Image 1 (tube, rainbow, N blue to C red):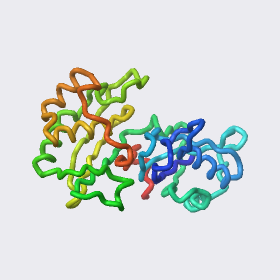
Image 2: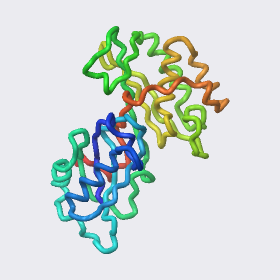
Image 3: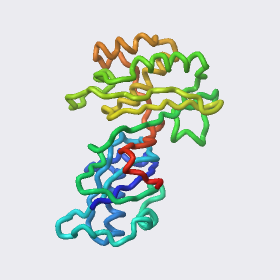
Image 4: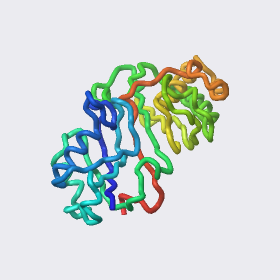
Length: 264
């Protein structure tokens, strides 16, 4: 048996989820807290790495004993419903477990994913907002209804199964750059906020942030919606937009199918 946790975190103080030797990470604080609560070393595996500074409200991670053979199937000493409260008591205030359920040993939080959805928040008011500065990219210019329409026209040309090499950070070692982008959509939330939703079966390094940067180039007139198709075709990172800042990005949801439902 494994546990699957749903986790929210403010990524501002962390260098992403995955362990790093000389920088604080979400995986490090989670592993420390869970091991302390369980009373023995545990292993925590995340659904994604996430970049430094990126946030999450629906991140998923599996938990099992570091030595599962000696612990057996009934290794967890805490009832499942009480696990979030127990772990949260040992976590810093910028990380929280918001759900827990049991899953089978062959479940993998990364390879069992059907799709992930991110949201990228943009503040486009005339003046910066001190209360959203850590969670939204302050654009300092208005995204008009026509600009958002053009962003969505460009986004429509990117949806589907494509080679997204042009939307991957230079220097990545990933060899298979084909992904199925199921949703890419800009939507106004209120007078000063726009969110770009991105859903796919997987994402390349910096992919969502480069997609957002490219759509913002379309909004400003630096690129046209038709350029999106050309960028895909040429597989050239230099043709795509800049990488939008990390702090505007948040992992909203990870979908594993109907059998994994934290809200049952």
